[in-house]
Length: 247
Image (cartoon, rainbow, N blue to C red; front, top):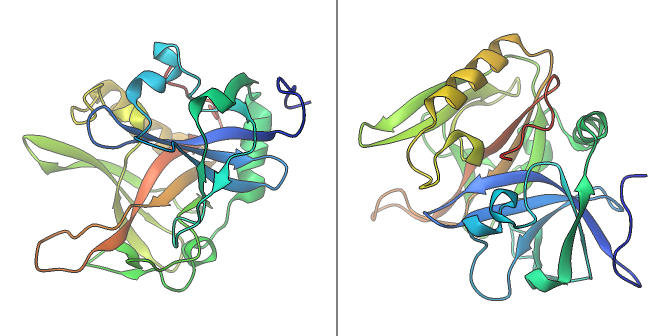
């Protein structure tokens, strides 16, 4: 049994597999609804999820955490068709997925091609950046099963470094930002060098890597360019340690 019910009546049951940094103090949380094996992004009716909603501060959210909630309100707006609005008081932490079950779930829902996840509207936006035009796309969340080893490196400006990942699905060659909360400090901008180095080593040695991917809210890279939804790597998952949690 994955879960136990803590509410009377119908519930929605979600296991967290996206835990993403945003601007300082804010996070993005999404997971897989187990009954339908589909992604849901948890969105508050007002405001944003905050860092203090993480398990390390007494909240319900961490990688692999099993959330049980009363039904919320779907708010599909392409490509963010997974948005699911509900108040925090409607959800509870029910437990933590077993590592093997968590990995098996990722395997079942993952794809091997980016356009299988995001649709044919996903296109190149630069030399190796990808995304969709504002309001376009069939999904904004998904998992990609890699066959070739990716390369994790640190880019960005010296005063504001950014973890990035070079990877391919066999057709598209991608260089994308990594927004995995587990690689950054609490301010969401300073890197955790030991975590970055450990992740680079895992990528060199792991026998299985799955990426949790997302499309950003629409924004323009420069004022003269149109707003687009940028492809980013939300989280990295490894066969040898599926439940790498913030703690």
